[in-house]
Length: 305
Image (cartoon, rainbow, N blue to C red; front, side, top):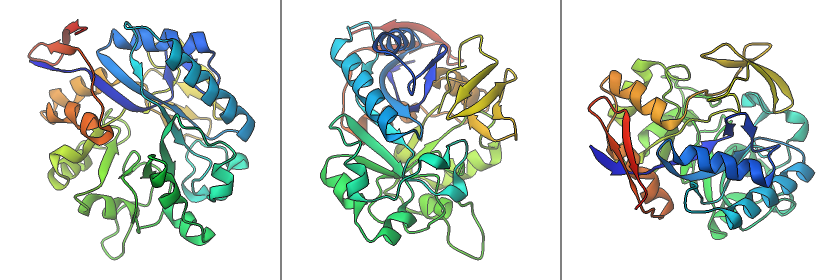
């Protein structure tokens, strides 16, 4: 089987590198390593942080994108996950850095290299300012995540469905339910065998149109590294070889890359090659090159194109 190169739109780091702390050379090294995994395009994802450090890391990633070579995964832009999310579903994010989702506050960190913003739509409604429309007018994808609201009007997609959002209740509306029944919304899912159960994945794959599923890793710096304890989002995170959690047991993100997730899904007969193509459609991007796989979805060869 030959497919397009993979595109990863939600990951915080790997190989010991954290995008919230990385240098330009760190980002370039990661982009180089990840290309060898068949991942040809990336959207480095920043977790909630101070305005100052967010500004700094946006500049770092943007500079790395300007310096990258052909043997690196193409840096398409930044995924800003956090700052404008709901404390009720904060996950590992530090609420001390949360800001009211207003246009004025976004302008504190605004940059043309931000391509995706995860936010809580219900907080945007409360603020009285239409940040969602403002972002869309800037050409930014808006995704509902770390939220509880069921009104996803204006959103392009949802961030890691079922995780850090209001789940399904058969007597009321919720974020997850709205995401499932809206055929126009793209839906991220962390299908690593830890974040979402197999039966829930089956429900998602039966409910959503095949071309609206976005496989993401949400991978952490410990992924493909020797790290077992590290600081992420101002929390000490512990990696036991399968899960990465805070001291209180909160999942901090995934510890697998997209090729690992694809193999995990394939073993359960849940993977569809169409999933690889969907980010291309969502972001209207293209990449030269392809990935050659064996029958068990192990990578045989990467063709640079």
